[in-house]
Length: 267
Image (cartoon, rainbow, N blue to C red):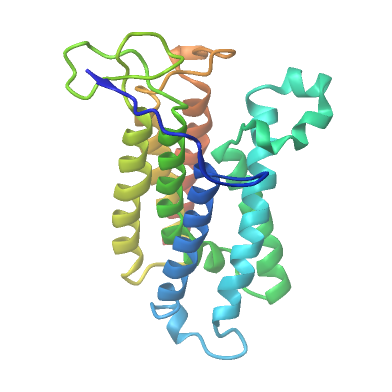
């Protein structure tokens, strides 16, 4: 049985300014995205697109900026709507209290989709050409976020068998060992999804297939990880014994399969 390390959430304190580890993981996520997206400029089909739709480094910068806005706004609004709608209806101003925590991946995904839809239309690019470009660069950012969750000792897993060698006791979660579900999600939704998607995207694909593979892959890996993650206390398990996270993954899995099939049938 392991004990969760007591890590100060503040990485650096300079007078009244506190730099949190969780904020640094977000910066790492955005930095990894920028680096990987610059590499994607050299890959087909993007390297072969000529003027006036040629892909340039400035496109990466614009996509990243809009992605940051979409992640933060969509993630926060999604959390408020999906997980605690009644509370935030009574306290609407607290939607803007980002320092209190509470972000939803699925809400962030919707925010990114809307932001990139605007980008695609403003640049005259096909929407799924843009999303196929982005998709392989996302999982490393998800992995960085799970590192932040682990450092903060939040979003811990369900109670584990005491014989589990890596069962971990988290402060605030009782004395029973639990699954370190943040690590599971780091490995599944982060590293494994990145490797599979990056290799898949290196081969010629029909427009939309890489996006469909991302939706399906993330949905499946998150659905699996949710079996080991403690459900939100105010929600518990919902219909069919599934958590809110699992229910939100169902349309992702179905949508990913549908998008991949639709893309493969196009001329």
